[in-house]
Length: 429
Image (tube, rainbow, N blue to C red; front, side):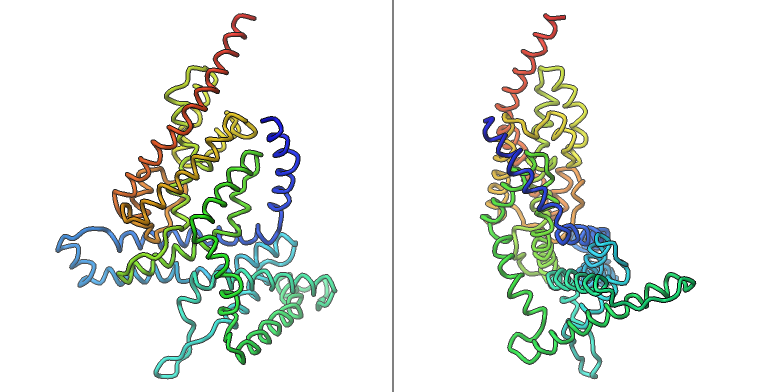
């Protein structure tokens, strides 16, 4: 086991650390985090619009009273802007890491996104942008445009191809002129790409990015095999003390957010939900207590500990774990670099993926309905909100019992070891 620990410390940890510092991945993660409050607000409206109440007064209130339509406007005005806003926030985040003018870069990226999005025309010849391409369907395009726009801006600035005004000019005016030439290169670049693609069978940047990037990543993020790989990486990196969720989130979160939103659209249309693997699938049913389903270990520590040290950690860690904050246990037990915890920490979330996937695939438990439940929402409540059914809460309870059974023998071995050490200290005193 020491060889494994040394390998994790010497080889895996430095490699994961380098990946975690890739500016583009950090920008994707932070850019999506910026728009999460908007998505949560839309989720509240979606919950209210999808309550399983069949009473006549409620049905009349929603339909004849017009509340379904009003709440639908909130949902579309939040979820429907995911891609559009991400084009700004991702470019803004990456620009700030490069110490560039984030506002200017974000606005130029936003303009490029609108320029690259095919327009639609109404019967009275009014032009507009498809709502679905401003939403989750445009998320991959937003990522690509946000990163490329920032890199072009940075390249032009490094070449010093900027208009510099005298020192007495107001800062806002100076920044706008500084962004003029980089902005010209960004717009011309994306204009040329759009015109060229328009003359081919591909048609648009959206079609190109979805074909080259979106479809392959969706094949990984949409399969149970991909979910297993994700959990193995999350747990493996965490065991070295590295928050791999921040690394993997930049890669897979856009996929699961898009699939979550497709479930939301299907729910609103009264159709069958297409996807099992979404962001709430992992946040709500797998990562209870944080990575490794640590709430199960917290319960073991809180209820079954004989060691005074474990009892203290259990009392401290149980409340944060119920809100899916695992760091007190991760570094307090510790789980990190603890050979006894390697197996349950890796095994528990993989089993949670398997049980939840099977239950949803067979229809025993409804799929997640597109509601973005905050990851800090405690179990039982979050399971109901994510599925719109009490079966979601029951699924969490079943998963929790299984996870406790997985952790218990390893916890017991650790607890006995601590008890022996505490008795030796008492004798020595």
